[in-house]
Image: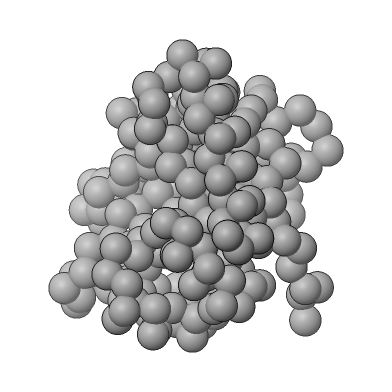
Length: 224
Ligand SMILES: *Cc1c(COP(=O)(O)O)cnc(C)c1O
């Protein structure tokens, strides 16, 4: 068994345990393997171990890494979890099955246009800046209602979920609960939250998708 296969097994056991402890249905949480900063080889190991869902931060990196893998492994599901520039919206629609980081009106408009031109229809989530952090992407909770309305009514986008990255230094659970409440209030069924350090807490708070990188693939090389 590869090192990645072993780690994958452990993460699945932890998700299963956290799901059971919080009395949620078995299988109600999906694992997104965050492969940003890791080579295609690592993705291949994860695929061999049964993982089909991957998350990437950048359009270009995802294009390079998954171009070949796509053609040889059809069940692949690719999520964009990093910030998206409007001029990359068309490329993102071409390669991603889920775009989790819609956070501003001009991006919603650019995606609507790109989807109209394309035969693909990725699932779309809004990113919420749940900790009100100035340096972070995401729509502020106070602007969420009006932004969701804009996406739905002005752009005719189908929004299916929410994602957040809570502040690093504090207990993430109150933020996870806030995101879950926001999703419930608006009938959004996908809730993407929880990373290597806090995915079990996220499961306990209602995550339907956790995004795990380091715990599966190891440390990433420092950003260039
Ligand atoms: C990198 C990243 C992750 C994975 O983080 P780890 O701590 O390595 O598990 C999850 N979500 C987003 C948005 C990321 O950028």
